[in-house]
Length: 319
View: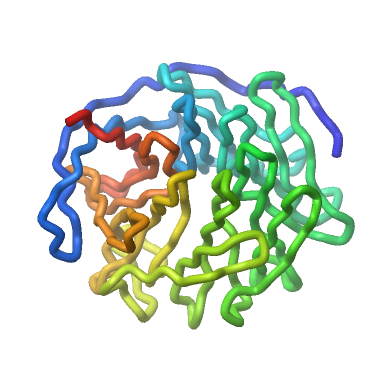
């Protein structure tokens, strides 16, 4: 590993954010409703936005693509200030730097395409010091997606041919474990909590399924009831089906998204009692959820009727 100073490409306060209050109806016939206040935001220049996580300080991490085809990462602090960045080792064009989970210490993890190695390398970005550390075990191509407050992490380990087959990996205290999930050649670990629980996805015939497990692999599987079981085209383009488990907090609450039988995308939460709750941003055309912190604040993105990508922060309302 080595550290490099970052040169910020631009810093700005998000020009657009709005507050929406909504009652969130629970799926599967549960009678109660959870109340959230939604804060929405955009990242200027983003054509597609991928909001990934939020830490206990309210800092949001994710990435986006712009009109030139570059993929860059961003941070949004609790006061609405957004900073975009590219790993300084990402010297090729178009840029391909994607950040995922950010932990309580303000360290964001992700991956970039290393043109020197011809492979993906993971990174840790220390937001307090503005330094990067690169993670690229010899002979591997990896992206880090999950990072907890203990410094354990997990993600995707690509195998040949690149981007067609990949497996999950975890690194707990320096012990690396690579594993496939349910015999799939396409799986990844998406998120870690401090107790060591991990969530991720695997695919079967192109259909996504979520999993819940630990440092050695899955212990159970997650499928939203009624999720599409055959690949189909979504309203905003692209093939999709099944269930994506993408975030878990220290209390064990899980978030993600699923595709219904019409291939509309919905966010969801899964509580520790095994109850699923659908999460749709009010007025959204499509919704997804990707991260949740210890306070139960959820982040993700949604599409409007024109399929524009917009980020959101869903904060539980005080009763």
